[in-house]
Amino acid sequence: MKKAGYKELRVYQLAYELSLKIHKITKSYPYEERFSLTDQIRRSSRSVCANIGEGYRKRQYPKNFAKKLSDSNGEATETQIWLDYSKDLGYMTTEDYTELYDKYESVGNMLGNMISSPEKFKPREQ
Image 1 (cartoon, rainbow, N blue to C red):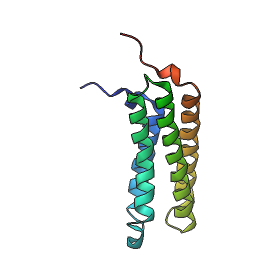
Image 2: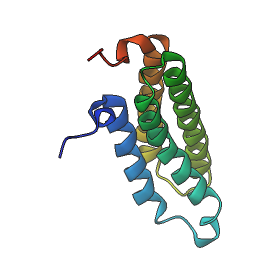
Image 3: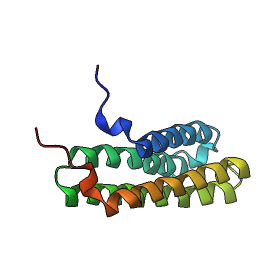
């Protein structure tokens, strides 16, 4: 089975790795956060990946591609906000927070570079 093209993107691989780590960490969040913070941070971290994949399928249209990447970047920022809450409420260690926050900065930088040059990702004519 051939790997989907978006899975080859380093930004997707990193965002996916971070989403899995967030899922594991949030398993220990208090029960009363189940339908609020836990759900929000998991959804936003997954949405980073989903928007990258959706955008990749639209890359023949650079403006649409850039829009989906911009959505992904927004979700990465939202995830960072939920990380702030997680740390400040004592649900996450400072070490996990710093690692995740900094890696989401890297995701944002990579997405920003892709957004500024969407034509580089346009599929080649057959």
